[in-house]
Length: 73
Image (cartoon, rainbow, N blue to C red; front, side):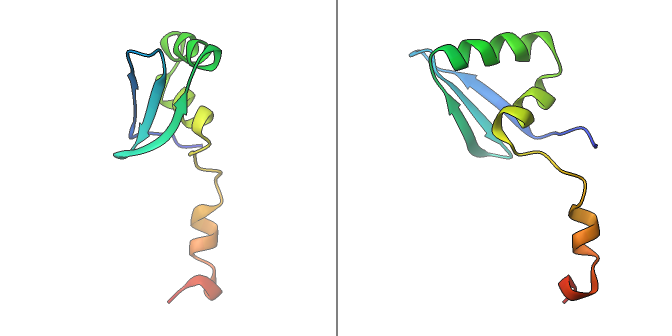
């Protein structure tokens, strides 16, 4: 799986976390989930953690589907 990129996150004053992917909001975490996310993002690969938490990561079949004859235009 290629390494995800284009993610960033912002901690807000109210304790919530906003995850942004390529300039668009991809998720907002509050409360215990925000604390859990921050702990995981600081201890590991933050890009991979954000991709996993938002579900915005490649599954590996995008190129195959794009190159299929019925999807070519």
